[in-house]
Length: 133
Image 1 (cartoon, helix red, strand yellow):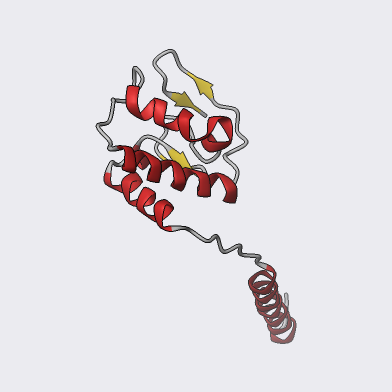
Image 2 (cartoon, helix red, strand yellow):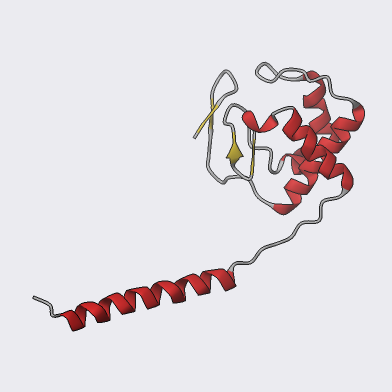
């Protein structure tokens, strides 16, 4: 059976270790500030207005009906993105976006592409276009 002194010492060491660990995490956390230009800011608004996040992800966050679009810009650039927006797919509807909205959305996805990587998980793509982890 432990006396009060060892219990207090263990409690003190645990609390002290927690505080030191928290301070280390706080000061070692590297944060990259990404400059977002005006078209990319407008593109983010288009992304939000049309609810793209309900089906797609950026940085692995969002819906799982469509693919993660974090690095879609490096796959084909602005033209590749616009082609999908204009024609749609079996699962994704054809959106009636203006040319300016498509350019802004492509600018937003370019910024996202330059600032992160999509999830490294291997997803299983179903016949209907949905994705399983």
